[in-house]
Image 1 (tube, helix red, strand yellow):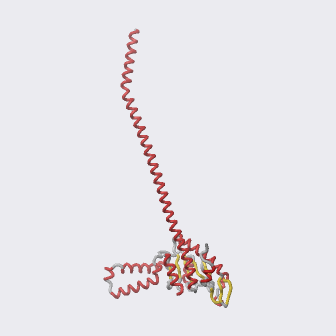
Image 2: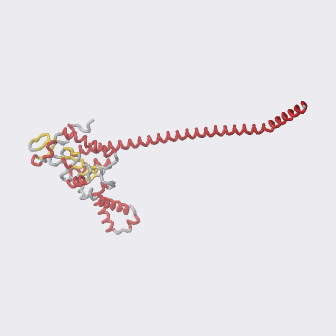
Image 3: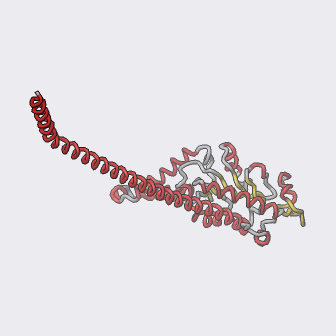
Length: 305
């Protein structure tokens, strides 16, 4: 079943491009026509690209990796925050900090600073010793860090991929990702170059409805991948438990067989010992019989003489 229909994309205004004078020639393969000086995007090609990008994102989330969503333009900020937050994926909806990817270690230091401030604030004894003025300064710094890095606080390593809205606005993020060979997914409008990203989705990146429908499809694909990963983990745990149970059963059977063999061996040894004792007890009687037979033979020989 398709992730989205042609009519849904049409209703969301995904097909609307920019003015003819603003177009990028690289977008020509994804254009359907030009009407009233505005380019119209071919939605059939958009559908194909959505499917391709959604499948790739699903595989990334299935492998347990993170996808960083980048949308600092006003009409996309709230949409990305509300739709991406439930998935647990990191997102950047305020100013893109230069070196976010290429200088990731420094960014991590700022995030660590935020967590250390949290620790200080959660410790009443230490926090009470700080003066009122210093407390205000700490609080302001904490709020500033929260706005900038709060959404990426769980990002301990470089993301496996970037999903970008408006690559012209987020050109620094695109450059950094390309430099580090990080796969990029993006909504590309008629005024952008789709060759700069690995998975371009030709779509209107200015209308909130268009952004909303694309982001929703991508987040659903990510959730699917996460659910599959969870179910696979559960199945693996189940299989491991069954294998362990079978192993324990086989071990118990082996131990029972060994115990049985030892018991049989002990009985055999007991029987052999009893036989030996019987033979030992019969030896004096045999010797006496032999002596009697010998003396009788001697008597017979003497009589003959």
